[in-house]
Image 1: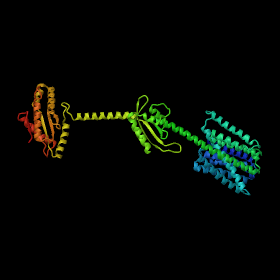
Image 2 (image 1 turned 30 degrees about the vertical axis):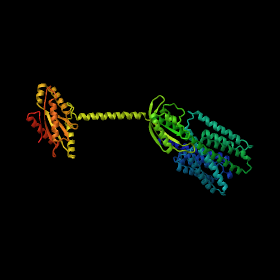
Image 3 (image 1 turned 30 degrees about the horizontal axis):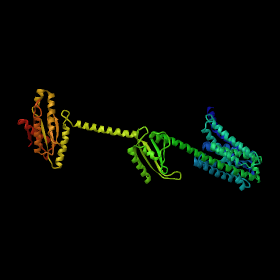
Length: 600
């Protein structure tokens, strides 16, 4: 039981829209046939095809068969109601179904079933598809008659085409309007719609309610008002109101059409052309107007977003009109200059806003860009009215003249004050980092007690000096020395005095070296002197000078040193060179101290 109920519920959910389509199709067909004024029993307008096409476009391929089936039943009922035979009724009904189906297929194949009534391109394709479909249906219908004629074909074609062109847009526009506009929240929208269509109803009453004056131009006035107030909805609705009023008047042999001295068929043909002319004038104008309004909304939105972006990025744009010398500024340019939004200055005033040291450069860049018709860019400073200095970057290009405005320069300007400050801080931080790195390097290569080079620095300088000596076929030497009887100094006076003695010896020795010589501490009381470019003779002279300086350097307590000197030989390494100097030092110490010896 539950399964049956579920199926019935699902079926009801599927069927309610096709049922509405069938009922609407039947009512429109009966009314149209009741108002038949065309040739051979053909209605002046056939709105039923427009109803079915709208249903197919709104629902797409989903349940399309149900809608076509419901419309087929409604068409048969309407045709049989005119006492047509079942065969004829069946033939005409099939033709009507084919008409809407072909039009829907053409539209969905190219537009996906979606039509923007405010866009001229899809509106044009809708008209083309409707024309093709109605031409096919008119040809098929003519083939079903016993005496086919051009008049019958044209009458069917015009009535069906009118039905599609006038009814389908109105249904779909109303559906879209209901989706977009909440009448409960916007009661003024409903009031505007009722007011516009009420005015058109009055105009239709005045025009088609009398047969004295040819007032067929009046409905166009109402249509234009509806177009400007309601857009495509106003166009489709107003034209349909004119269609209904004119059809009713014609069926009653009344209205301004009766002033035409012609047959009933000719007046019917004129009415169809009149309605087609109204449609051709109204809906495209509404589409163009809606497209223009849409572009205006987009432009306003783009301008709003541009101003928001400029404000966030502190970027403004400007244009210099070369002929008048005036400058147009965007709001952010005023903000950058610290000015309220007022009339932009002349070009000379704008240049004078720059720092005096930058004005000549800015003027030259602008002048060169105008003369060569090329782009430009510069960084400069602006002085605000309150005296604050702002850094800016500006770049732009030559803007050639057109039919709307004269030639000029178009540019953008960016407030770079924060960036300049950041770069300044970055440079300062970089300098501090380099200084700290240099200090760290020096500390890593300096003996902490004496301030002279440590073992690491000594070995580095030794390696470089030996490489240079060999590359240039030069010479170099080293001298190693230590403090005589230093252990007794520590034992007698203590390690603190011993440290002071080491510092005094290092200071005295460093002041008696050549400019390129390096004094380093190897550890304890042992020191080394690196003598780049020195021969053994020069090295001995420097070592003697150091010995004498230490000997006479202080008396609390007095100390002496012993030195060993070694000149670089071709096969020497750092270790062998230092080893030979150390052996010479040992000789100096064993032969009495306070002396120097040259390595063999």
